[in-house]
Amino acid sequence: MGGVLPVLAAPLPADKAREIDAIAAEVLAATGAPSASVAVIEDGEPVYAKAYGLARLSPAIPATTSTRYGIASVSKQFTAAAVLLLVEDGKVSLDDPVSKYVSGLTNGDRITLRQVLSHTAGYRDYWPQDFVFETMRAPTTQQKILDGWARIPLDYPPGEQWRYSNTGFVIAGLVVEKVAGEPLLSFLRRRIFDPLGMAGVTEDDTKALSPPDAGHYTRYGLGPVVPADKEGPGWLFGAAELAMSPSDLARWNRAMIRRELLKPASWTAMTTSVDLSNGTPAGYGLGVSVRVRDGVTTISHGGMLSGVLTSNTVWPAEKRAVTVVANADFGDPQTAISQRIAFLLRSSTGAAATARTLMAQLQAGTIDQALLTANGKAWFTPARLADFKASLAPLGPLRMLEGQGVQVRGGMTWHGFDAAFGTRTLSVSMRLTPDGKVEQFLVGPKAS
Image (cartoon, rainbow, N blue to C red):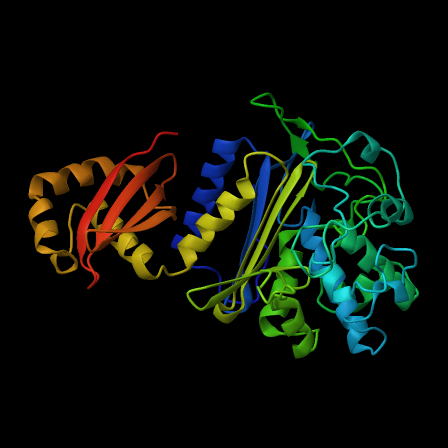
């Protein structure tokens, strides 16, 4: 287990830190992932960084907070930021056609930089597979990628659809290199990483990371954990080439929250969903996913390479961010850890808040009568409350409530949830009357 890096703000409260440790231990044990590394920002400052497990299995090397992992497609927002810096320099426009910088691309005179950065250009993705396909084992060049996937007919007319495509970020990376007159990584280091103090950033495109940085691991079915195949040099350029520790990535998240380094207009362009040609929001800005729920905007991106998974999520208005990287491409440990940390730190709203409150009360063997309808009060007898306490309390803290549906019936609204604990997931069935009172709150086993 790695140590905790010095932080700039007050550390996370000890009880929250212990819960994060428990979450990581539970998820690694459940998935078999060799390691995970976590960084948390609260109130705009880093408050927690810790690594768990082994960065390398043989010989065994513990993961630490300085261990670097490939961050996969989280790299895309840095390529997008590089383009935005060139916009700020007056050297490019997001509405420039890509043909101005890269010749011979299909419909290059109609497709804009904004569209390639938002996955709305129509260029076919060169890597939809979740494994390293045979051709990908050999070295490639950016031009070979574009010849194979961006100089063929489009998948759809530009702007009409959103389809994830690594190909667009190869184009964007080449635009940066042509306009800036230097390699993409050099530009990123000079204009982003060095100013933000991201001193540990490297790349894992031209070669694999070496010890003490993380090895990348996979498994086939439920077989043993083994080293994952490495992509050939050149395949990750612009789209997934960066490697760093979550603590370095947290420095970027802090800049996003505080709107530093880039100009406000650039941050707005990056973190605002583009609209499709029919006016529908795509749910994606420039290199980042954009989701608005209950008035709260979430800026996020995941990443997958052979043997590594990354989750990076920022809530700008809450001045909060959670980064998790795992050196495994199976079991989604990064998602489980990230979501459970977010659940721990963020308040629930609406029906989820009611369910969360009731679950905590039932674990304690009590219930707030003011929350219940007359039928609900009659149903929760002392004997039933005792059964709830005896069966639920040993499960430990609630880790996650995940909505499973909403239906209206009999004048009431039904909400279904999966309630995740450390080693068990239960099913919750709750019915609310129009005034928000709880008519029904049933908790039971869920088939795995």
